[in-house]
Length: 96
Image (cartoon, rainbow, N blue to C red):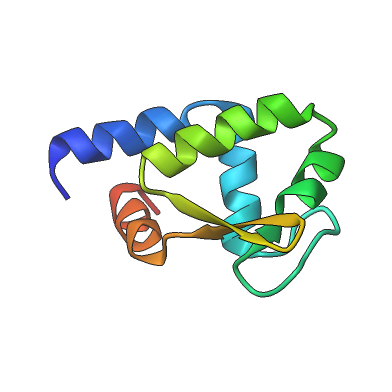
């Protein structure tokens, strides 16, 4: 991972709501919502975090642009999944 990509990822994760959303997606189970391992229904994220849909949508866009997640439509639901390769890179960047 080059420095520019690392900076883009760190910038995306620098907002508390984005970090919380990202960790929820990566863990697949946090604050009582879970669809399958390592994927979350966006409507469950919205309900769990008690922030508006437009705000969550904005944060998801930022996480997607940084290469941290992907989203896909499954019927009427939007499902967010982590980009696991990027997650491994993020773990290497962080101490501990």
